[in-house]
Length: 288
Image (tube, rainbow, N blue to C red; front, side, top):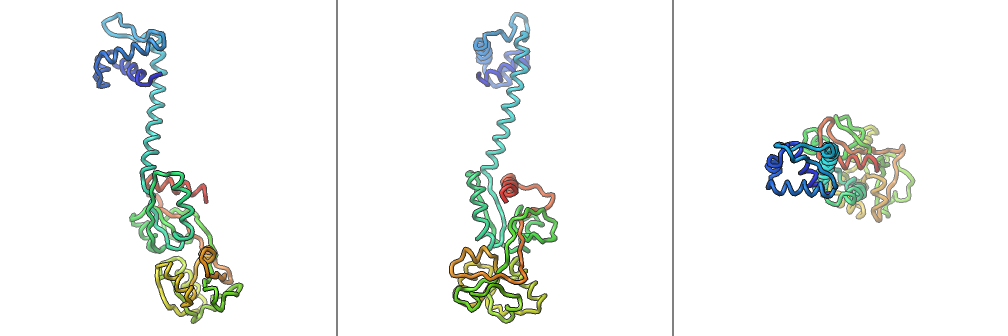
């Protein structure tokens, strides 16, 4: 059945006039009359009584009108839903993330989401957790990755809980060690993130509590540079177990007592976010 003919018939019935329906539909009146006539012929019933000065629906026409309007309402709902989906597929997922997680965790998560939404694009901003929390609270970004232990006013979705390890090159004197204590890092040459990054904050906290002072040979937020310096023997660094497992010529040695670093996807509490970003949070909540 032709939905356009149902729409024309419905307009004629509501307006009780072929001419008024034609004006509402921006059609010529003969075309409206022909459409209704063809609908009657296809159904083999008379829908409109044309014998009086004003048109009137036949009993069959009245019954069809209610059914036609129900169908047209469903079609409109489908079109609105499809429009919303098109809007989502043409949007952009935007997320801020510390470089370590962006390098070793985010690719798998993003590729899974984007493969299900091929029309979406993604924008990833690299920043430390303190800066990410500031941007979230001030409305500069909608979603970001930060520490799950934060006390900021944020909605959190647990992302990963990784063991913290000391990373050294495979020829380092510690490479065969099963574990290290935080006291082992006293006066040890190290290359580390700048302050404000979750792994650096954790290191500073552990050292301060134990009265340990590493020899910080270099500080940088550029992860490939840190890894290169570790491999060249300039110093050790701290990272997540997955980082050590994915890097060649790097050994990750757990700390004892064990130290875990919980991270989460975050957005500001009570703030509406874009369809694309909300879809990512909803998708991640199922997958994680």
